[in-house]
Image (cartoon, rainbow, N blue to C red; front, side, top):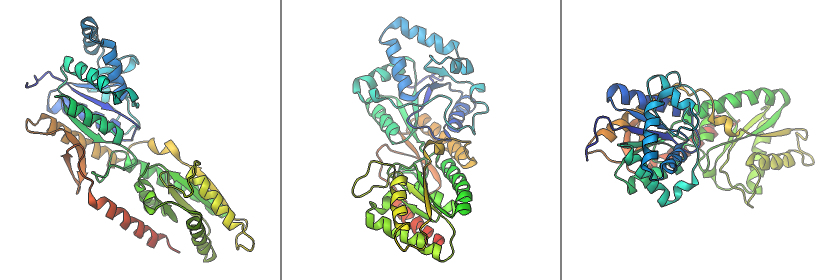
Length: 381
């Protein structure tokens, strides 16, 4: 059935927040209202908000009428102010001034109930009864998996948009939020360098990234950090940590006065460890530098887990531009009668739609290895 011009498109943010989500929401809403004359529903709290709304209706015709009235009555800012309202009809004013703001004004959440097929069926039924023609999902790997399931189990048009600072989605060269997170890490390294230089210290900083080392290696290249350790390099053994400490000590004997070490959170250790990698590495380095006869027995190693600092902050122009490009491609695809369900992806600097479950870009791993070599050559002293 061909949707009517009044049939809305729904958009949600799911999983961990990423800078650029607000810029993406603004672009989706403005393109819908200005270019396509189609209303846009914002879903609060991701899949959790959809589940909450579905259970609010729960097959009750009167409750469905009340929900529709709430959506049409409390639009824009009025709906956003009401914390209990899960579905908001967005207007121009509701997305004004949000482009550079970190996080997402719609809120985001993880929803374990969404793993259940019967819960997804409730959500699909609700969206159909609301006349929603398509759903756009912005998020990381888990969120896009949820979008893939909805696409397989419904007749809705579903478009996923990669938004995660981890840059661990290998089908796209870049995800929303990565550029901002790298800028934030460079800012952090700049501040740690000041105290490292002042006190002749080794600073071990742990970055996010899940199983990918992209965030750490990009930040290392951009900040001039002396060492970067990523999951792709394999597990850290006691022998490998000693070799890394030897490398730092050797550089200091040749005149280097400090060292910044970035370690990605996905790095594994042998034997397996439960503590944060930054603290494990600190202990190994400190033991080596303090050994009998060492040239720098008083050399201090200070660890820091940068954590969720990396998710916040003002979105960079790069992320805001990518958000607009992803939004435009999402609209093109969902309005194309011959278009397909899938995910927006940046491939060879062109934004396109790729199918759910598409193969990884083989160039990603090659590029990562080349970046590691480039960093080693630039940082060696």
